[in-house]
Image (cartoon, rainbow over all chains, first blue to last red; front, side):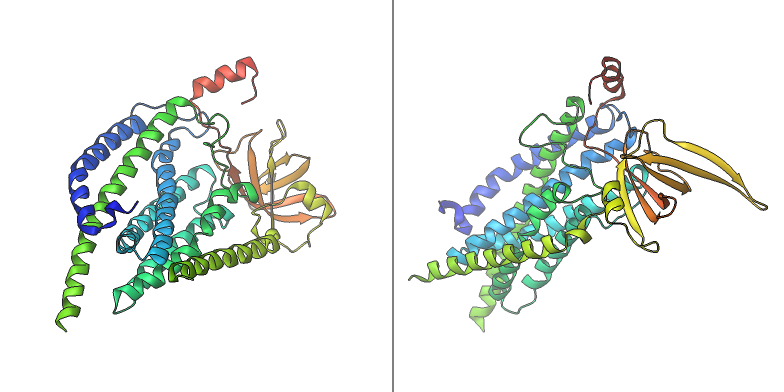
Length: 237
Length: 147
């Protein structure tokens, strides 16, 4: 199970797949953007504004997915004390925060022409904003200690506590009356997005996911070097 | 007991504790977490006249009326419509682009108990989860299929 949890072996694997991940990210985003902007129809009600969906929705999915990965890594880190889990967790946080910010900003730009407001304090919007604060809290907490291991430990407890926010974001639109509409894609039942609009959405989602993996691998590499330097310094002292 | 098991129990404890806490908090705050009430909720739990509330529902078809009111200085356009089930909403202002009869809407304002009218200070459009190209919508309309 933990064959690749050795940072050195992980690094070898990562270096091999990195160019391919970049290639896939590039191809999927290129096709996705082309279809989003030039080769998909406007919406029957919203018109051209609907194109914001192709960046807003994948970013929102990623903001939740990245946090789930951080949560799982934090549990592994606390139970099995795997360094790589800490490294992944720490590397994920700024990327997740960025996607959350993109979600909030594009959502706001989308909200003005459709709903008639930039922002409302409904359950979906508020819980997504809280997710941003948890990400930022995680970044601050993991860097708040002289000893990075102490930072890792505290940040992973925060990440586990913050996991509770994920189901709240996901089901906020079903549990409470919100201005935000419910999900168009659900596990059961046909999607309520027409297939010609679903296609660019899926391509953008895959492209941005590969982009996330690419940035993550880069950050992990840097983090491993930083830790080596840190441990070396501690040895010298 | 191994240290690893102790740590697992610690994590399970945190997660259970946080889940129960969140559940209690969210169920108790339910009334504050909903963004709007339905018309029937407003008519049963009648709010105070000076309490700003939001009410949401579907705009009834053929209920939108625009009337120009003139006073000595200015002209006003009074917009009125009803939302299901039959709560009349009056509004002076600009409706969002997505405002349509048969679509969802959330109105913010005050409920007038005597006239049984909701005086909106702000109207927001609420759109549903359906996305489709205009041509498909037309075909669906022609066939009379539920979207």
